[in-house]
Amino acid sequence: MAIKDTKRLENELREAGDVSQFLVENQENLRERTLADYLSEMLAKKQISKAEAVRRSGLEPVYAYHIFAGRKKNSSRLKALSLAVGLGLTPQETQYLLYYAGAGQLYVRNPWDSVLWFALERRLSVDETNELLSSLSLSPLLGRPEDE
Image (cartoon, rainbow, N blue to C red; front, side, top):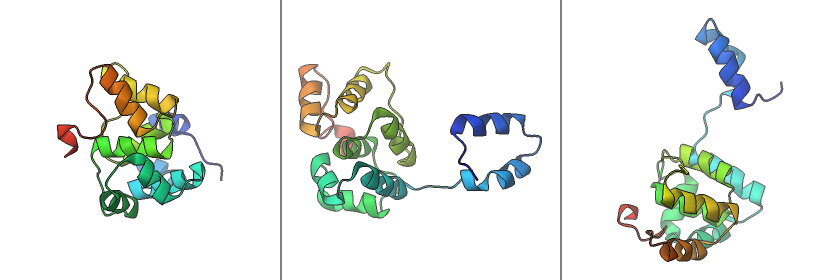
């Protein structure tokens, strides 16, 4: 069975007369994933080791390894974004990461989020991202009060 994209699933759900039937017909397309599952997938896709991703993220290693192991189900948004930068994710991949982390997605109308989007597009490091944020008088990615 071919994997259906989200738009196709949305259209089928919109047209479905019975949600139970929709769920049965699409069970292979509706798998529940965890943040740890998604991170594992991204490590393989980006061909980067967990240790390197943790180092690049700037996160405290023990905490980061707890996220990768699934012991931290809902990481803070800032820690998830730090992992996204460390993994070299695209903005779209980061949106999925934020979803699996139970955090708000990036919103380009928000200046801070726009800078993060820009940094992700250009694959800036955490340090480069923080320098850019600082140059624009915005709070850094790490070390913000809500990151504690």
